[in-house]
Length: 118
Image (cartoon, rainbow, N blue to C red; front, side, top):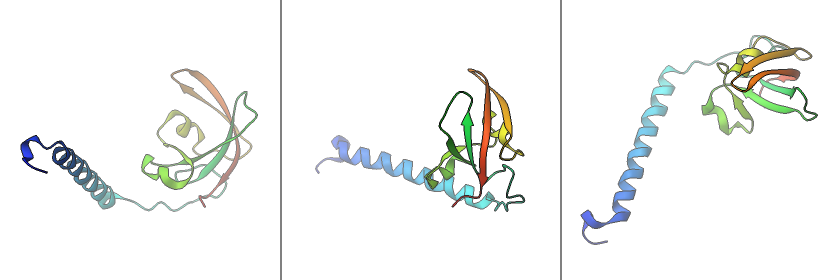
């Protein structure tokens, strides 16, 4: 497409290539330090479980995977175990109600079901 120093398509492709190479390095680093987590309990919320919750004042439930944002392609919304909601849910079972503090205030959540991801 002519002179490379004035070719916008060339520069955009080089830029995208740089982002892709950085992402590959990031994924390789994650794979080197990855740890497979085995579920120890089928009835308590822990990393890697799917939890169905009802927020205080809501009629509908929400379903979340407790895990890393890298697991976001699983079909579930992901909640980090280190987030305020994630910390509050960890170790609790279906039927329990937990409270957590968020920047917008204090919230109460009822745990409806806990299950392994499908």
